[in-house]
Image (cartoon, rainbow, N blue to C red; front, side):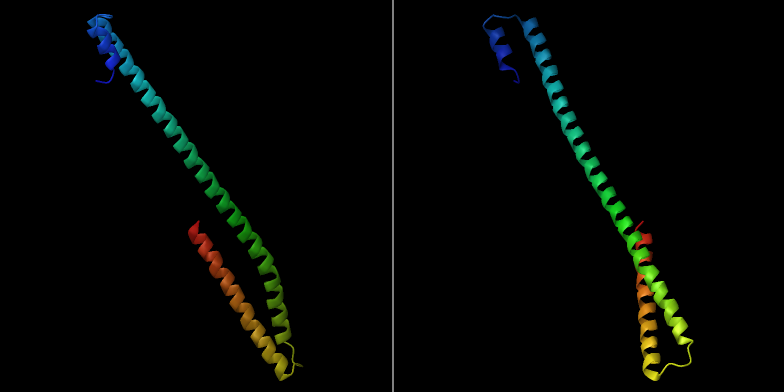
Length: 128
């Protein structure tokens, strides 16, 4: 039995059977209410924890996006300037062979960096 005290009191005649039933029903409801209250508190705590985790993930994603935007701007702008400078120098006719080879390597490196940036940007867009 869940509530032996009520039965004990009824057994010794301190309370009668209808009072025992009322006490049992009251204690049963109180116990259920206590369990419900505990479950609601656990549910609220779990919900708050889940919301905190979601907020943390959103902040991390926002930070990542901001960083990538900054990175692309700060890297792409000088890279574009270098590419334009390399093109202009390639059009010059008075470069010796070493300078032409150097420009060729610089152009290749510039194209590789631009390709890498584009790949990272594509991966970022896929993730979003």
